[in-house]
Image 1 (tube, one colour):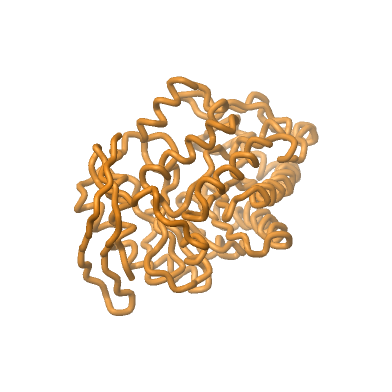
Image 2: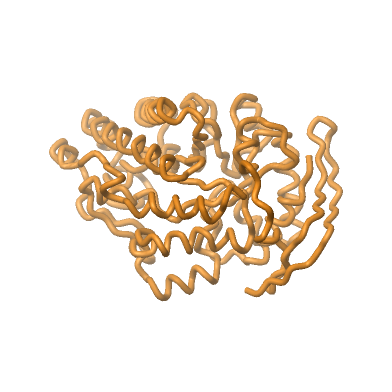
Length: 390
């Protein structure tokens, strides 16, 4: 991809109600890329504090900050080139230089307001005595799935400084590179989702193994969940100490639980993580994402997180009403929309921002970017998003 700097003014009036009126305008130096679209000049002047953090606190901001889940990798040609040279996902995600390079690829091209660490929620497992790998075309593979009390006893609590020093080093470098022009984001897996992987032995369609454990031997599962809870709280603190300015918790599989089971096997552990982290890092924003969470939104808010990330199956306006005004929201454009026309993408962005209203909103997708998404459409997404004005 080649890019050339140009001066440009983009004006796209948008109809919206007076209560949440905004319009799309931008007057700045842009970069036009060979794949199409324009993005902000990478040499933008550094700001005192990232827009994303200001928005989360409810400060008056001129537009919603924007970043995309899974924005590092998958759809980018530059990432695919690295994959050809380093085919092992674990090698790519456990080498400081590669982690930094991959994390910064979308930053250099699109200038998102959040730069997320390139890693995986399963990265801590090796340090917890749970051998695993991520196999191309198959996904995560847990070599010794956990099913019994004795299996849980073999699980060690996680010491991130000892087990994943490359994460801390990469975050420190990212903070230096991004220089507060965007927020550096860390992330961890939530206890129930991590437990799902290690009990099922990998990804699952029916979650029958972990549900069998939950409903027939709940004490065993609770013991495992507690170890993940203690470990992930430490991991968040470690990421924050090394440069992460916000951390997202992924509880992707918690929505496989009924509400009553979520209240037993996920909610208390999420709340414990939040409470523990807030004792040492009271100002660290915590974001919670659970795919397919429409039936659990009010319960997600009970965890005490600062932001709930909505998937695209929830209407943004309804999600706002259900969560209340005290909590920030993230999302929730359908990732599939990025396969549409530029006009379609623009309309979806404007609809989402209008429904979210002014303030305490991070514009994002409702899930990660899909493989095969055209880079020029991602460029257009960021151009439109960063041109919005409340």
